[in-house]
Length: 355
Image: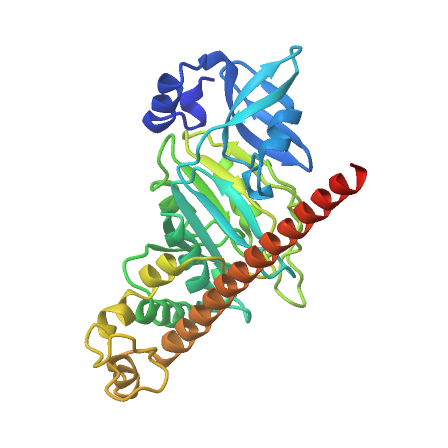
């Protein structure tokens, strides 16, 4: 195995050459276990930890190494190494941390395609697909929608679901598959590209790990069977990990998300709801919020049926959420700055008292 097998490309190579790095000292993170990492180099898989300098130099936890990152290593034996540097990321997928208003959780880095996996069950939700689209678009990751568990519904129900998606989402490939009877798997396989990195995104139990096992043609991830009562898979993925498939494509599996919280993803929302932004150009007022204003082209399109109301409602909800995140982030930075000044003054006063 060489570095190209795990995604080494012109972007990574330029950074290596510009910084005169030794290729034998670099690798890509393929798994994260708390503060431990598994790193693949051109010759081995190494257990790694961060150096103290790296750990202390970061300003935010999101800067810590994650799956998909390229890193510099300092080996201290045949199986272990220290991570001394993280390469600049070409892109990364992130979401808002659960239960924390302004903290971000970086999911994976240096991704080419995002597989948005959604099960055709009673929990099927196009609003959620649009949220994943916004996350992918924010990161400049090409989205692909994968509808799973099509074996439990009729062809008519499946076609209705696809039609509903097409009413709201343009220019995103849709694949329909069954992990149970392998319907649609061969067609999906033909689209996978050697050397490209794919990230699996979706709720717990939609079949991501099972799909990965099928594509890999071996059990690389532990899975559980579908509940007969709920038609829901039992979530088993507990960490993020990168896998190399036989056809040369690279996949990152993730623990299922219970919440799909947005961060500062204004650009991603604009790309996801491009129809609305096109309509907004015809609003009478340049600062139109598209909620109650007269002569609003967006509201007129909703009233006349030219824009799906569900799309509009989801856009408003996501825009408000994104605005709240940014406003809270600004307030947090202000509070942190005030707190920093307070600590500085306290330390200054202590020095004066000692004199």
